[in-house]
Length: 127
Image (cartoon, rainbow, N blue to C red; front, side, top):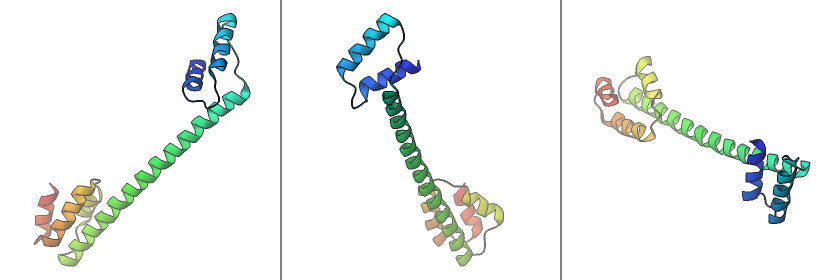
């Protein structure tokens, strides 16, 4: 299976894999039933896969970190607004606000925190 995956990759994505290389490999497979890849091609395939995986992982990590930072900042802002306008929210209420991961919902709650008349009214907006 690994060999088939590597060959498929070489056929579809390897920059220096020519149709002549493919023909030679398929002839060798038909004759011998198995082949061994040259180390340089195998190393190239592995290195390209690792580089793509690292780049994808880095990008996903950065995106996740940005989102977590944005939601944390918005949650802290809501708690600060409520504290300044009304009173410090209870620890369970702070925990509930901090658990919200939806940016749009946090924006709505921040707007509501600016106009609500009590923490009790704010709690109803969380439901």
